[in-house]
Length: 346
Ligand SMILES: [Mg+2]
Image (cartoon, rainbow, N blue to C red; front, side):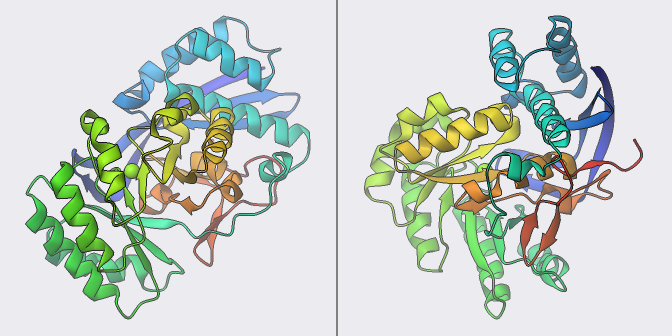
C-alpha cells in the first residue's frame, strides 16, 4: 500500500456564518492510497471539535497510524487501531473512507452497493448562513434559480439575538413562499432554553419541519425539558459525535445528525445509524466544509437517513474534486466502483 497526502485550500463561494463565527475557506487534507493498481480517495476537513484543527495535525496523526503497520488490517480493525491510538475523528474519517473506496474498487462495485444499500431518495438541504436580510433576499435566487434544490437549511442562533433571527427567517419565508422548497433550521447551539422554546413555536407556525441543535452543548442537561414541550422535532448535532453518545439522548431528542468528520468515517457512521434505529431515533447525515470526495462517501450511505445535508461542495469555488452529482435535488452516488470521487488534478 502506498499513501500520499495533499493539502488543498477550499475557498467558499459564499462565506458561511453560523452562531459561532464566519468561515470563508478551509485547508483540507486529501489521502490517496494505492494498492494492487487501485486508488482509494479520502478527505479530512479539519475542525477543533473533530480532533484536528489543521491539515498538518491530521496528516501527522495518520502518518503515526500508518507507521503502526496497518496494511493487512480489515477496515474494522483499522477503526479499532485508530481509536486505541486516539487518532482525531476527522483524520480517521479520511483514511476510513479511502479504505472503503479501495475495497469497493477491488470488488468492482459502487460503494453504496457494496454496503448493501440502494440509491438515496431524500433530497439534500442547502444551507443559508446567518446574514443580514438584504443579503439573504439576494442569495435565495442565486441558490435556487435553475437548480433542483428542494430544501433549505437556515442557520439561526445569531449573536445579535432573536429579533435578528426572526428578521432573517421572515425574509427566507416570504421569498420561498412560491417556490416548492421545505425549510428547516439549525441554531448551532445559539439559544438558551426559553429562547429555543419561543423560537421553535414561532418557526413551527411558519412551516419549518425540524430544528437542529437548539441548545449549546453546555446546556445539554436542559434537553429533556425542551423535548417535553417541543413544538418541532429536535435533532442533535454538536451534542452527538459517536454511537456511544446516543444513549444519553435516546429519550430527549427525535433524531441525531452524524457527520463523517465528527464520527471518524463510514465504519462508525454505520454503527451510529444502527444504535439510533435501536432507540427509535431518526437519522440525518450532515457535512463540514468538504469537497466532492467526502460528500460522495456520505452520499453512498444516503439510503440510511431520514434527512440529508450534503451540500458543502456546492458552495466551493472551485470544488477540487468530482464525484456524486445532484439529480432532482438528491446527491446521487455514481455507478463507478468505489465512492466515485477523485481529485481533478491529482
Ligand atoms: Mg448542524
